Every structure is written in structure tokens, then in C-alpha cells.
Length: 130
Image 1: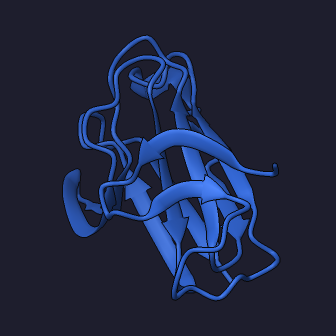
Image 2: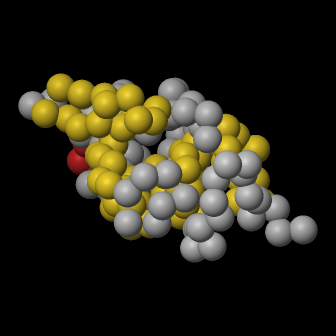
């Protein structure tokens, strides 16, 4: 079997498994899984690195998984931070992810998806879906 699953479902209700066709969804054939690490020390602004890689480019129907490799809680919340003020856009939100936790989301539409950590809004990243 070529099923692989992270065992989590995203807040938006998208399935976080690959290698399966979902009823009503055409198989893309090119779907991939990208992994982003929330690095050790990300809660410290001077760390310089927070989400690694900071930007990911992927294709429609592909999944991105964020792993909290830091020792403190973080979030992956879609939206932008303007003047230190987080502005969530509601597209995806991991909720509080404790150390060792992970969050996966399947991107079903092309576009640019900026995101940040609601607890540490200087932590930002972006997923670009083609």
C-alpha cells in the first residue's frame, strides 16, 4: 500500500493523507508533501530562523506539514502581521502546537499563503501554491 498519513486532520477538515483519491476530488498526480520545521530557539526574536524553510513552493492538492521541533508551543496561523498586529485570514490555523507536535494542511487552490505564529508574531513564513 502506498498510503501515508500523519494521523492528524487539519482544522479546515482536509484529510492529511497522501496516495489516496478522495471522492469528488480529481487526482492531481503531482501532489507532494513538504515539511517545514519550527526550529529550536524560534521563540527568541534574535534567533534569526523560525520556520525552516521560511518559504515553500508547492502545487495544488499538495500537503504541507509543520513540525514543532522547538521546546515551547507555537502556532501556524494563516494571515499577515502588520505593525506587530497579527491579522488572521481564517484559511488555516494549527491552534496551539506543543513541543513535538505537528500540523498538516492540504492546499486545494493556487495562491500565496502567508502565515505566522500567534504567540510570537515575528515568526512568519509563506507557502506559494502553483
